[in-house]
Image (cartoon, one colour):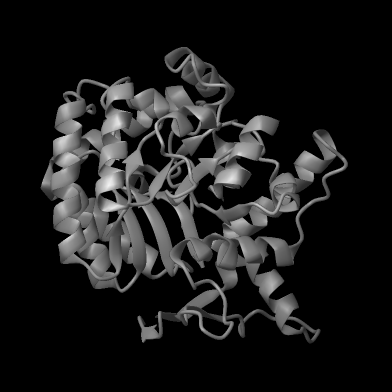
Length: 362
């Protein structure tokens, strides 16, 4: 299973501060926590917990946001490499609209620190790869976005960021990049929105017709984060619409706006969110079925890593072995029924073994 969108440094405050919407939540909770990762001792303690729990979760592959701190990001990558997980990790870029404790000095500093991090991480790891990570348009000046594009062209790296998560965020982006026709177009103007640049955009709750067409044409991956979207009162992404358009869609836990690394929980919440969308927003869009959210958690997101996310011939052997034998029931169930039940009974399911790319992890 692949987690297409998770914030490693936010794991320390999961389950806290869920009474705010996105922009206020970032300023009140996220930025103060992430600023603490300048202290390597704190970063080590926090990332050891995160990586240990991620290793023992249902996740085999993940795309992870770190912080803007180069040394702490490399520390996270060191730990992930030792874990056996296959991951993309991003040193966050942000040179505006942060806080005094969490904002890069200027675009030149961000560019230099990011290139230093890229050069180290390209040489140091086998299973842990760098991914360019402009936090989102509000956090990155035009000059910084142009510099990130230079790095992309030089090192041919993928990109991850956020898109159309919150109504106020979208309005803010329009103020910051008035020439853009939609939020996605702001990324496109800087050459960081799919096509020759493999790209993940998290959320896509309010993507309009133009933005959807742009994502579809550019091959952008959507990381659907249902629990996060509910916890921050962002809304409900129209995932049925994206699947009907044959777009790339996977699941993200989005810690810490999401509360759990368990992608089985994300699967269940994706179904529940789609039911609310069907009932309250658009009754032409049927709720997601178990088979569809299982696809999102496996091949849907796994394909970002290449031939991963399925047991088909020629694909990497990634497997999570679940034990449901202790769940008492008078009826016999087939494999699909047992898997569907596991999705809802996550507290009663034990993860006993994990393989990644054919390697026994535990």
